[in-house]
Length: 397
Image (cartoon, rainbow, N blue to C red; front, side, top):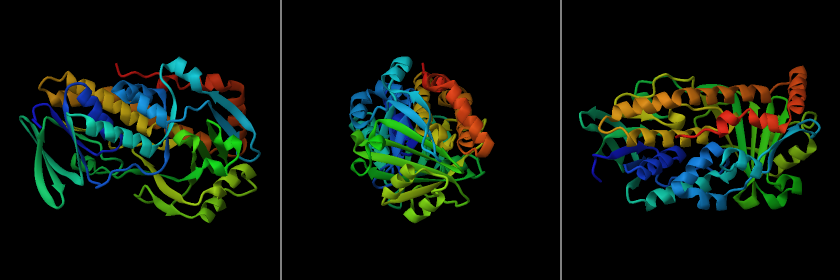
């Protein structure tokens, strides 16, 4: 593959693969390096807001992803102690009309496999598995990356390098960002439960959000409604770099005690036979992501806690913007990278801060929680949704 229009991408996750497809759609070439031999996003659900689905549809993935997704009718916010609904935020057809793109619930592996299939099918994209980008050296014609595959060292040339290698990005460190991610004193537990094992209310196409003392629970259907994705988040000191550490059912139930959590949600948690957990980290917003023809994308640049359900959405937005900037860069890739960073910095900073503040609101207790619930009821679902117009109505051009 000629290097004169080739962008190297480290990481074949959601952000890296979307970037490859967005670049190829604009006449550039992409080589994606993934250190895993068999890349597969871990078994969990993901919410894709209209800001993300608009981009994915524009890349030609709409039909494929819609067939693998569930369109939620609403977000139902409930009080954990008594199970009463606090507020219902409308989504479905109404949200799609408002934002011009749908809201989807999808299994991560279904999204990832669709992106990978599309990338492999594109003549201007090469995906190299079992290959890690270890170092890079900029020069007058772009850069040379040192990659390792099966212990063999090779060189790859391109006009730019996108580091989409996640929260624990090694290339971020290589760029001079030495500080580790910031632990947020919380742990997220996730499980997939067959829908057939749960009652009708749990199988409905709704995002359920239960707010309780020192924690909250989110669950919604995926895979055409055949499975229910469950995420339970608690205040915790446990830390790990792993995304899929094993967790025991009795541990999670001890965190959601009967005197604070409704029997319905506890019964659902008890149905899960396999739990995974991960510690929540983010980073303070950075003013500089890259240098020369190299930059960061997605969690490598701006990791955020999951309370806004926008980690993947921000990476998908990044991919769209960087492709636009590089398409119009001429021969000045470095200038295109700085333009991309300038276009993305304020928005991703806002999303990071909104995610943090949302988590603080979710975990309020006592009088503060009473005021929160009352305010939600008074505001109502449509006004609550309108507060996120800045998020869902975003367009890259």
